[in-house]
Image (cartoon, rainbow over all chains, first blue to last red; front, side, top):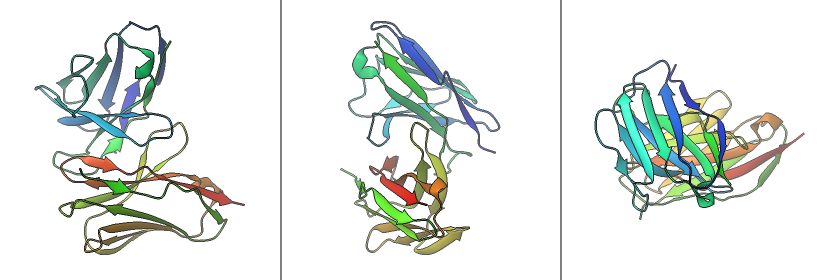
Length: 116
Length: 108
């Protein structure tokens, strides 16, 4: 149980374009999902907490107008990187707890974004 | 600022040996502690979690927690080459905070 999927697994885009990444909980409902970013040789950094039916909570230093998060249903959260630039190239990973209030988080397989 | 510290390694052990991975954290109020394994190019995989002081065993893995010393460790017994990966310590204190990870190399 507690399977999280992401789509696409990798994407290459031109600078200035927008990219949407989907995160789905396949066998459970996730009222909360988390979005992380990981640069090469670095650890995971929490970008934002996505809450179903309400606005996302962004970590300090993360531009909410650049990284748009929509958690429209109990199984789907999307992250849109708007006007992407090469410095946005990274590994984006979502996660979700298997049940509300649980501290454990199960991670999706990640999306590798390369901005040319 | 809440921090989680790990030795980046690499930690190299021979096949069949015990690998010991360590982690310290700064927030005394932390309640939940996790070990994730991350293979190169892949996302983290949860392998152990521990909430109470002491040891918790699951197969070849043992997690140890000492809240007084703010210390968490992971022991891997009978290490296998397939255990070669980066091991991330994560601490829940309002949000999940990850250490930098320790790279483990198990040599045949």
